[in-house]
Length: 344
Image (cartoon, rainbow, N blue to C red; front, side):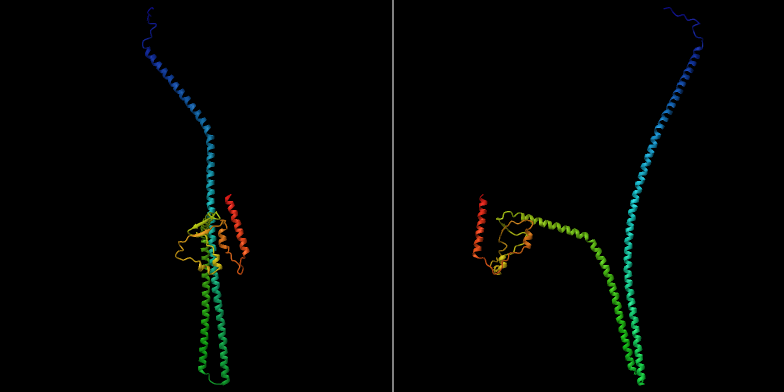
């Protein structure tokens, strides 16, 4: 390959390289600035588009959320108002009841006071009437005495006996004092009766309140008594259900407390039976009682033993020999039937 020939035509001019480098750097800077500016403009434009789209999407959603929030707020406020109205209504009813009770108590007090005032006024009116009647009686009596004195003076034309006049005055004063004492006693008795009536009414009201307060306690006591009676009846039922075999002879050390003792028919018929067949008191605790248990229904055993009277034969009649033979024959026949049933 031939060597290239470097001539003055092909070589750049002196001092042009630096100038070209400077121009090239300026060109590159302008291109870079243009790219950066274009990129910034595009980013700003796309950011505006995205923001506008986001705003367009968020605005109706924000409106919906705002409406929902307003609805929730209104519902909460309405519920609170309803609760407040209910509480206010309850408080108003309570206050109204209390006012009614106070009015009733005040009316009762006023009625009681009016009754007492009426009774006191009536007593005062009666006392005033009695005073007036007594004054009229005293005036009539004084007038009569004066007329009698004038008549006696005119009839006898003699001086008045001072001792007689003094005795009459003393008698009148004693009569007036006795009448005043009687009126005072009547007045005191009426006032005492009025006070006793007021105290009696007050005691009746307190008794009524006490009875109303004890109603619940009485109901609880009744329920407790019913439970005790049920437990007793259950115990007695369990005791009577144990007696199954009619021919069984049971040995009991002591009878239960709930089962009453049956009366002895022989002791009722013959008064001498108790003294002849009575056992000594010392050995009574050591004896063992034998009882022949009969089949008794649990529901009617207690009522039968308590309410049914014992059999009392009619006095003056005796069993004949034929009757005793027929009874013994019937008993033998029953025993044979029972024995045959047992053998089967």
